[in-house]
Image (cartoon, rainbow, N blue to C red; front, side, top):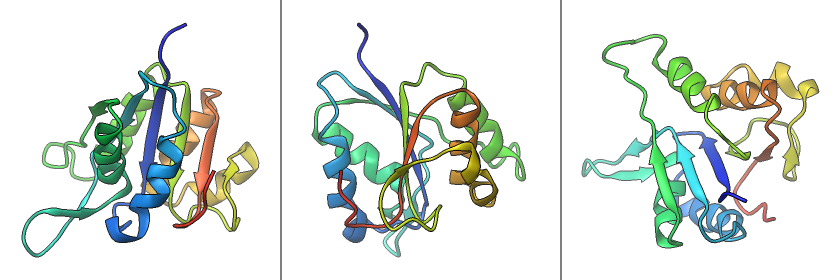
Length: 151
């Protein structure tokens, strides 16, 4: 059996101070050898260093847990309007075992596995687009709506 490959996505405005412990709680449940895949989105602080973004936080946490991390940044310079969807499609076509989405994508107060019924709510954001692409391919994706929602 090969090591799990987990795609993590979420809002780029998730602040590290709010989300780090929640993301850590979800990722630490993954088995040794897990690969975390993300789109490298982040929020840059006044000192020009990352201060948040679910992708960036997940990458940092995954490295601290000894996981392999694969980053797939969108090419906003070459594709100013479509870089996010292009990158999301690339990631969705990879060998992904499951998805984890962090941020207020659904009205649920608890974590839930997204379903086709949730699509109308998911289409409005880049994270929603990523989750939808995973669901179309039959990849289960857990949505964690806010900090503090633990596994």
